[in-house]
Amino acid sequence: MSTSLWVLIIAPILLMLKKLTKLAPGAARVVVIFGARCIPDRIERACRRAEWEAGILEVPGSLTKLADAISLVAVYLPRSWARYGFPVGHGHQLRKAAFAVLDYQMARVLTTEERNCHWNTQVSFSADSKGVSIGSRAFYALWEWHIEFENAGIARCFYEMAKEAHRMQASRLILEMAEPDYDPCYMSPQFYEMLRQTKRFGCVRIQLFINAN
Amino acid sequence: MKPVRRSTQPTRDVVRTLLEAERPMHGFEVARTAERPAGTAYNVLSRLEEAGHVTAAWEAKNPVQGRPPRRFYELTPDGAEWARELLAQEARNLSRPGLRPSTNPEGDLA
Image 1 (cartoon, rainbow over the protein chains, first blue to last red):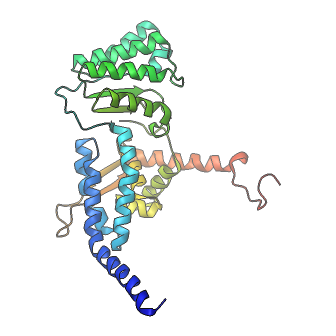
Image 2 (cartoon, each protein chain N blue to C red):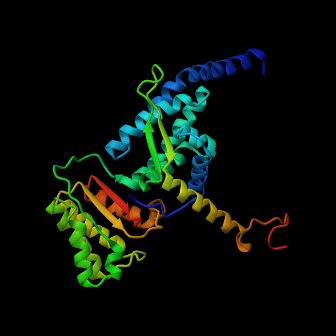
């Protein structure tokens, strides 16, 4: 291959790299701002945006800034969604948010009286009667059907919960699971089944809370 | 306030970094010192902050022209105590015979 052909190939690549080096800091800033916007919690969103914008400026090197910004967003967001909820769809902005708490382990270990007492304490945090209704239906579904968390029956339970949530026009469904060492990122089969069922019924989002107490 | 129940290796690295630092550090600095991706470090810092082991404070408004203020993290006194216990527990676990890294180049089966 002649020298001129090499120049024709390499020169545009070098020019693109130079251009990319110039654009990379701005792109890194855009990436972290966009990433921060995807955080579900409003306070954390504002906090992280300012923090990341300042932090990314401290990273030496233009392309390194961009790579760090992309890795930051790629690593942080899935965990953040696991903590605050996975956005399932953006098609609906439903008017009323419902609040439902399902303490799964409670159904397994407590007596009926203890369970009701605990349940009343839990739902007292909710000001929304729809949320209480959804939560209690889901809770009794678990209780009556004897669905074990590890069993395939969890999909059926989630299906019913999602259907009920949709009927109630709930915008979110919060599951609180008393499994301290359970990392939502690793519960893929059950969790994705839940996401799939919920998406089917048009819930806006699911929040999965892991109770660490 | 949610206690930290899972202490993964990144958690211990971040905790060690904060414990050894003699001053508050911002998130990217923690990540760099702990040799962890920034996303991992921020997740750990969030969990530690929720658990009350770490406090965060913003630096003065507009310290440098054109740069937003940074947020600095440091262990609380209780958090420092917890961190020492966590790292001591890790050291104890490593000193147990079954969990000690193998020094045999041929592997454990030899």
